[in-house]
Amino acid sequence: MPLRMLYLAVKALISGVIVAAVSELAKRYPGLGALVASLPLVSLLGMIWLWRDKRKRPGQIVGLMSGGGSVGSPRVIYIEV
Image 1 (tube, rainbow, N blue to C red):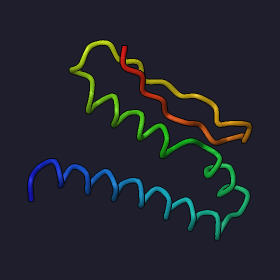
Image 2 (cartoon, one colour; image 1 turned 60 degrees about the vertical axis):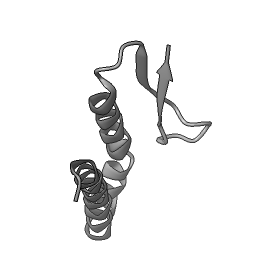
Image 3 (tube, rainbow, N blue to C red; image 1 turned 30 degrees about the vertical axis):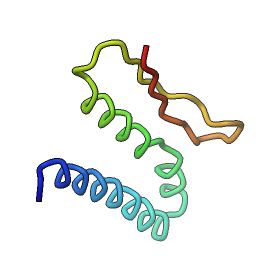
Image 4 (cartoon, helix red, strand yellow; image 1 turned 30 degrees about the horizontal axis):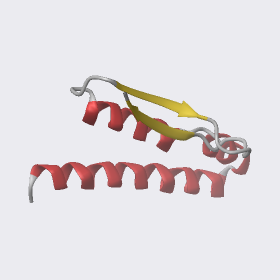
C-alpha cells in the first residue's frame, strides 16, 4: 500500500473514531454528548490536515467560516492567492 493511501486511511479512521466516540458519549450522557457534538472537532482536524498537506506551497489562506445560517456548522475554506 503506498504511503499516501495509508495516510488517507489513517485520516479517515481518526475522523470515524471521533464521530463514533461522540455518538457513544451521547447515548450514555445526552447533555455532555450534545456539548461535545457541538464542537467543530472534525472540521478543526480537517483544517489542520489541510494546513499540514499544503504548508509548503506559498500564497494560501486556510480559515474557518461560519455555516450558512446554521449554528455550530463551521466550514473549512481554502483559498489560493
